Image (cartoon, rainbow, N blue to C red; front, side):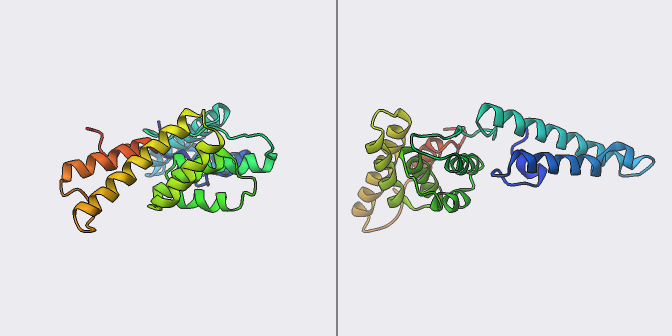
Length: 207
């Protein structure tokens, strides 16, 4: 599986299906083996051609399943909530793709333009803000998501994780006169890895 098939195709995760197909056709023509007959770069072109085919298949299958197939990452599925328009759902799906690709700032940029803000919006915003280090905003938006959908286990899990990290950090600052970290490298790495796993990543695979 390709880690970032969108990058292979040279397109954004928010690209439309037509844009994806256009990029695929152009790259297929560019690297088609027939274009490199008797060319010393033929092996490289063939390898690239196969990579393009695999990336395209992966993207289209992931879109059919409503998820991004990033290796080792949680899948944020297609978003839809009551009262949203088709355009807003499209934007939220773009946010989900950005989050799965760990492109948190791009996700925040798209979120800013969405007017209808439901639980999914606040959940995605919490994940994105945590990803760029805006921990207090992440906490506030995680709480908002849970307030709007208190029975959503995914939202509750994220909120609990961020609250635990915040309390841990504040307690550490008090004990160490405002210094960051616990002073124990292993402990600090474990804390960071826990939050990273909540976001769908894995800072330290051994933990």
